[in-house]
Length: 251
Image (cartoon, rainbow, N blue to C red; front, top):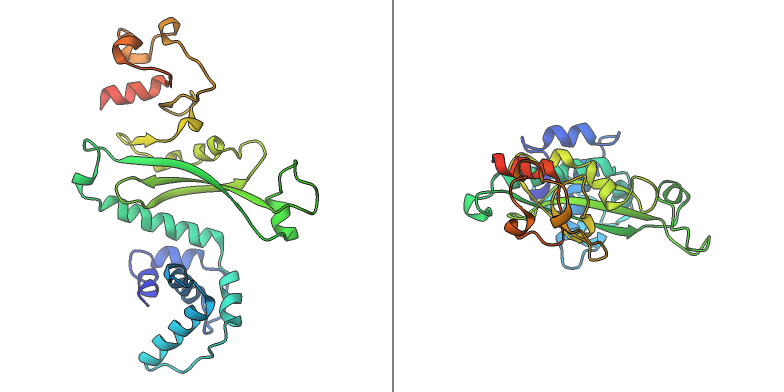
């Protein structure tokens, strides 16, 4: 049960306890259920039966009492896990891994952080529909609740450093809107890397969306680099934020 030991180790125990849902000390506590779920996800078969069998074998090897091989109790315990608990543990472990990245893994000595988003569908329940309504283009009763995720990922290690989730539609729930909630994931000197979808003047420097045209030869001075023309900088079809150039020049 390496996952259980990691969740209850000194680096993660505080978060594990802080975000565990209320529970009674039974066979499948939140920590046990989450560690089993992690093992299930990493297994090629990925079945609940595998998770329960592995837990039963571990208990027998440790001299603990036998437990049933039925999966019902484990599945119910897994459903009680909170999104907040899983997210906080994921991001904490991701930040720990990112800090341990070898310097040779960095780009020009800088930490590169990827940003990207995706959408997922979920079971069509009233609770899910209320929080994550389906698209208005879908007929009532034939669609599924949809959530949008945006994550900040360490390029050197592939670890998720931070993430935000919201409905797939609605003001403030676009990928850009969710990304603005994650600005705390970036430190001075970091490089943010994303696709042209994130082209905007609010955040930083990205490749410009192909549907937009910007001619910097007729534009305004670019912050501290106002004496340098866009032609000399070899900037073509990009979105520029003066604050970004200021920070880049200072570092």
